[in-house]
Amino acid sequence: MAKVLAIANQKGGVGKTTTSINLAASLATTRRKVLLIDLDPQGNATMGSGVDKADLEYSVYELLTGQCTLQQALRKTGKAGFDLLPANSDLTAAEVELLDMTRREQRLRDALADVRERYDYIIIDCPPSLNMLTVNGLVAADSVIIPMQCEYYALEGLSALVKTIQRIGQTLNPSLQIEGLLRTMYDPRNSLTQDVSAQLAEHFADKLYKTVIPRNVRLAEAPSHGLPALLYDRQSRGAEAYLALAGELVRRNRLAARQAATAN
Image 1 (cartoon, rainbow, N blue to C red):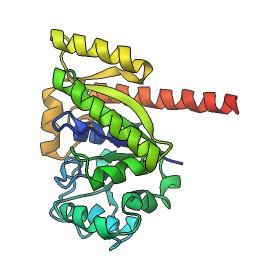
Image 2 (tube, rainbow, N blue to C red):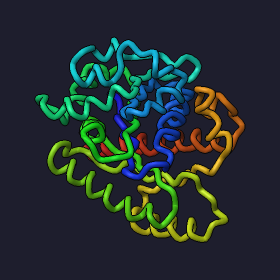
Image 3 (cartoon, rainbow, N blue to C red):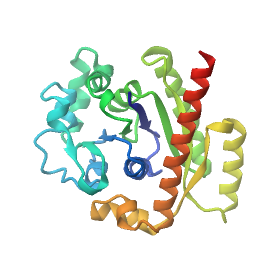
Image 4 (cartoon, rainbow, N blue to C red):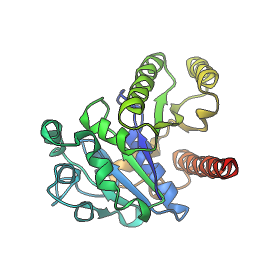
């Protein structure tokens, strides 16, 4: 049964899509079966995975609005090694259309029910706002990875996001929890970075990933080539960091599974 991870932050430009693509690719290299879902109308995760968002017969929009099956919308990413549920600007229309639909918050979760057995991980790249698409992502997810920069305003946004996750957990998805906090665009020479990191460690303890994602030119260049950093430049610091994150994620999940088995 797949573990479903939403990559979410209401603040834009924190590395959600970069994290979604590169974590998916890194998990795929460990021979895990991975599905990446692009839930952002900008379609950046789609393009960054090597799929042309302008050339889609079916996308997540048709899936959410009941015009196709998940199998019809799925695309292979070739060398990247994971399956993709793509998106483009058509998805903007789903915002309005979902309002009149039954189970509007559960549309994605319902669509994934039949394929969860086929994957080890399903990663959802959420848009940078709290809208019906993000709610669908959070309702479908088991847990949330929060990418964030170590800057002052990020802490304010984090507080709002945690409250949103708690509200979703109380109403629509009782099992939803925070999987971990990921520090992105990390610059250890910056004193504010150190201060914010210390606050995160104090308040979130073991939820804070030890792995940090550095500022890295190769990470920024890779999407324009339609490739994860791992395939664009495997030796880059960015690619190595996401491989380390995948390893940390798998180890955490393995430990949690063992502890749950022992408790039962």
